[in-house]
Length: 109
Image (cartoon, rainbow, N blue to C red; front, side, top):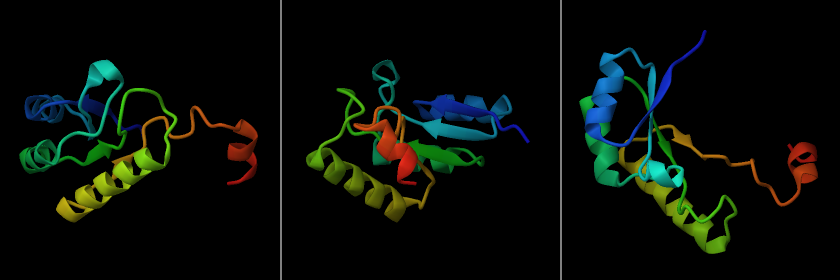
C-alpha cells in the first residue's frame, strides 16, 4: 500500500494536507534550510488540529548532516520533549546519507 506523506511547516499546511488526502504529515520548520526540528508549540498545535499521523523531523541545525556530541545532546533532548508531549513518531532526516564510513553503515547493521 502506498502512503502519501506531505511536509507541513504550519498548522494551515497540515490541515490543507489532511483535507486533500494526505495519509501522514512530516512536520518540519525551516524548509528552505532542508528541514529542522519544529517547535514544541507547533508540534502540539498540529497534532490537535489533524486526525492523521504526524511524524516529527529531528535535525538540530542546517549546517550539515554530520553531528558532534553537542548536536546529539540537543537531538536527545528534542526526542525526549517530543515523546513526553505526544509520543509521536520521529524522522531522523537523512540519518545515514552522509556517514563517515559507508562500509560501517553497511556492515554494522
